[in-house]
Structure formats: structure tokens, C-alpha cells
Length: 316
Image 1: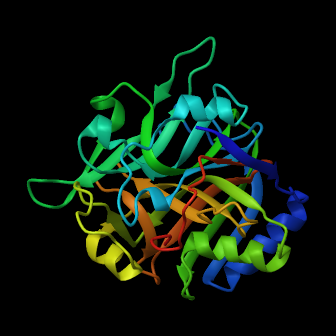
Image 2: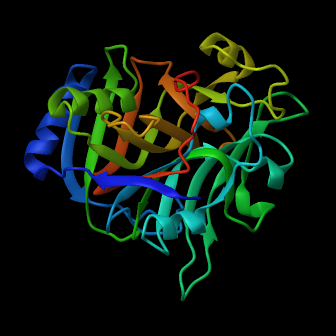
Image 3: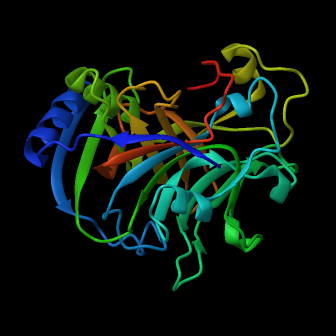
């Protein structure tokens, strides 16, 4: 991997920042509340993460990209979260995010829900990630803890990652209930920031729970497409879509706008303790849905192994 670009993302004073977010959410949800709170202990229910918090030198990384998956998968593109931690100048980082599993390790294509305490000089890595793939037995979702079968920290093709020192501290708590608009939870937050900050890119990441309701989730097929996927319609026909039930624990990364690094501006994957997970698109029960999130603005953005040939297909 090679870091090809990084830049500072402005952090606004918390009070003003939360007012901006809350105003935007209330345009899309019946009830919304944004506040600054102490980060809950993420080693406990329902998260069971390997770090207590998401604070300390927060940064985001966009690794690889959709052009390595579409139109034809470039399976030689394999990365390591421990290496990424070093490249973003935070060895030992606690990393959350959404990406593709390494088909070289799994033998199949799958969604990666990244939750890793990367290795440091003093401690080995702790991989709390999940993988979601199509179950060959019933064509449903097969969600597994990564460490139940594998002992590495590899991933393939692409990932959008939020990294920090994994410390407790103050975070932005976001609550939103009863969706009244068309935007999903993440897009609403991202577009709110884009509308307010304009050309100044602001990035955020963290975790949120869909506490009640159901959601539209996709999982990539276990086999990469034999035919080139040239349009969004081709991609959607290839993907497998499901309606999954709450509670779903989501890891998200989003940037208000792409300042010219060929970014995926939002990407969210989720897991559950009832065997469902994958790539989040939208809740499907707007009247009853409830979201609870813990997020932070990032101080820096790192772009790693940016594709030389690019397109905008399959970025949803």
C-alpha cells in the first residue's frame, strides 16, 4: 500500500456542530437529538468491541476502491489492517469500518464488518470483525465472527475505515426516530454537513445501532461476477438484497464531499447477535425505526492505493 494523500478535516466547536447535525436530522426524522456525551464502554453489550471507545487522534482512511471490484474483480488487491494502522501514522489503532473480505483467505467473496484493535509493539492484534456471506445451504445470510476461523487481519479490494486510539472520551451521540424523509440515517448526516460546510470536507466515523425496525441490506455473492458489471443496474442485479431486523450494530464512515481523492463518500456495514449483517442501505420501517449512534469528526483523511482508472458505478 502507498498513502497517496491526506489532509486535515476541520473540527468545529461541539455546540455549533451538534446544532447543525440536529437541524439536518429533524428535516428527515420525526424526532432527533444530538448531544455530546461520554462514550459508552464499547467492550460491553451490545458491542463487545476490543476497545472501550472511539476517541484519541480520530482519522479516516479510504483504501483501494470500488474500481478494484467493478467491472471485474482484481483479486490480487489484498491489504492488512495492521499495515493500514502504520500508514495512517497510528500503529496500534482501533479500527472500525466497512470493506470486502480477502477472497484469498476465505476462498469466497464476502462483506467485511471491520472491528480490529491493530497490533502494537506491546500487544498483538485483536480481531473482533465479522464476515457476512451468502449461505450455500439456503442462500440466506451467513454471519460469522472472523476470529472463529481465521487469525489474520487481511481484507481485499476496498475499505472505508475510522481509526482512533480506542480511548474513552467525549463523543457525539445521535438519536433519530421515525423517518419522515427519503434519506437514510448516514446520508442525512453527510448531506447535512455538505450543505453547511460546502467545499470544506468534513469526515466522521463511528458506530450506530438500529435499535428498532428493519433495514435493507445487501451481501455480495460468494463468486465474483464472470461478466463485467458496467452499470449500477448490473451491480444491483448481481448483489443479493435482504430485509434484516433490528438490533443491527453498524460501523460507518462518511465524508461530506470528495475533495478530489476519488473517495467513496459513505460506507456502512452492520452485524448483529442474531445472525444477520451486511451492507446497510436504508431502513424499511420508517414509522418505527430508531437509531442511536456514537460518532466523531476526523482530524485527518488518508487515501491509500487509489485506483488509477476509476468510475462512479457501484458507489451506493
